[in-house]
Amino acid sequence: MGMVSRILAALLASLCLFGAARAETQKDVHIGVLAFRGAEEAERTWQSTFDHLGRTLPQYRFHLVSGTAAFLTAAVAAHRLDFLITNPGHYLELKVDYSASALATEQDLEGPTPSEAVGAAVFVLDDHPEIQSLADLRNLRVAAVAPDAFGYRAALREIMERGVDPERDTKQVFVGFPVDEVMRAVRDRRADAGIIRSCALEKLLAEGAIQKDEFRVIGRRPSGALNCQVSTRLYPGWPFVKVAQTPAPLARQIAQALFGMQPGQDEKAWTQPDAYGSVQDLYRTLKVGPYAPFTRLGLADFVVEHRYIAALIGLGLIWWLTHVVRVSYLVRKRTHELQLAHEAARQRGEQMEHTVRLSLMGEMASSLAHEINQPLAAILTYARGCERRIESGADPASLRDAVQRIAVQAERAGDIVRRMKDFVRKNPAPQVPIDPAAALHDAVALFEPTATAAGVIVESEIPDTLPAIRADRLQLEEVVINLLQNALEAISAQDDKQIIMRVRGDRDRLHISVADNGPGLAPEAREHLFDPFYTTKKNGLGLGLSLSRTIVEAHGGRLLVETDPAGMTNFRFYLPLIEEPARV
Image: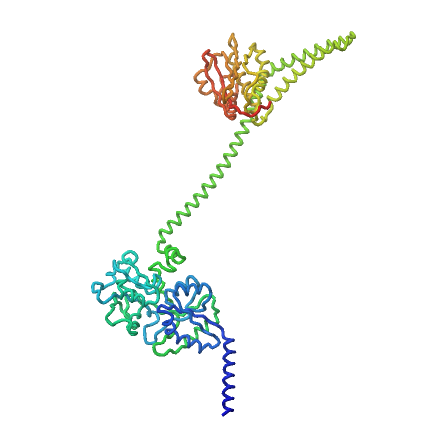
């Protein structure tokens, strides 16, 4: 007897060691199960499948993970599940969002075909005879597990086809899992009707949870071999689902094991996976899940459904983009052309201004030459006198006065040459703060020889000190000399020739005017006086007054012509003052 005990003890120890070693080599496989009636019911329903997998594939240890659709979806997203057993609608969403695929579809060997195995029933208390059809649900309270429950969506399609909008025409009451809560909500009169998975009422009746005549299914449809009351179309049974990250060899082993399962009475079997096209049609009709308007598939469906409108919108967008590109190109091209035109106009303006300046200098050349001859003649006279005094042995101190006179005349000639050189310079200096009194005195001095040669004395009323202005000194002198030259030509036929230049400063402007007692301006001449190339002179260019106005306006001023109370023609312009210290 002792020997037998020792042998049994040794065998038991060996079995324990073998079991422990086998457990260490087994790989864990986690299978999620949708628990629409709670975890215990889910485990009872699918226990035979798990037992078969454990026997067929002993190298794996299978773990059942039950929960709601939202819980299982989160587990798939976190890569915590290898497979799932769930309803057709949940599988469709996992297929689109997480690339899941069906390995097999449940099959009842004595029941309906796998493609017509699941539906939903809409039920009411039997003491509501006024509710006979789905159309009678208008303005009533309807209970369901959740808005994304497959049974609810299957019933939703049927209700909507009868002209009832559940969201607008009914009050929806969502009670959550398990589905037994829907029955309790209707029994407690918290809802007038309930939506429950097909065959769930029959199970509750078999379990004694409800009485035979307590509830009544409305909107009944033929159920075929399902042998359950339903209110909806029938859809494929639950699939056994592989998630994307599960290895393909393991998936093949699981599929082979499922197809070889020999179920007992009331146990599930598995067959080749259904295409689940009817489920896709359901979700597409309701525009929910993957076919919601702004999901990937929903947007594609929207485009297909409204393809003509989408084509018009697409053509409109193409036209608009083409128009934008064309307008942008034309704007850039036009801008470039305008820039080139402005640059060419600027260069032509500078050239014309230089031409006018040279024309003015040509008209004044003889007078300026005469003016320069005067200091040169005086220098020559003083130099000869000094030469004679030196020859006569005069005291050097007596020569100082003559030498000083020579220096004065040389400086006078040098000033005349400098003014001429500055005036004919082609490129003006930038606008800077200047003393206008000095510039105006220089302009009058430059013009004075021409006026003297014509027998005219320019009466200038220029204060010795004036407020500073910001200007190009050469262009300011050019405007003044041009106005003086025009005045001189206007009085050429007069016996009593008179030119008056007045300058005054007020609060914010410097006013400069040149008046003459010529014959005045004809109305036509006054109208076109500042137009380019318009002239009343025989050999004139018609550019002087046009450029003068352009220069004045570029300095922020304005050039005008008027007849003063004394009958003199008065050209006047003003320039803005600045507060900066003047620079000569």
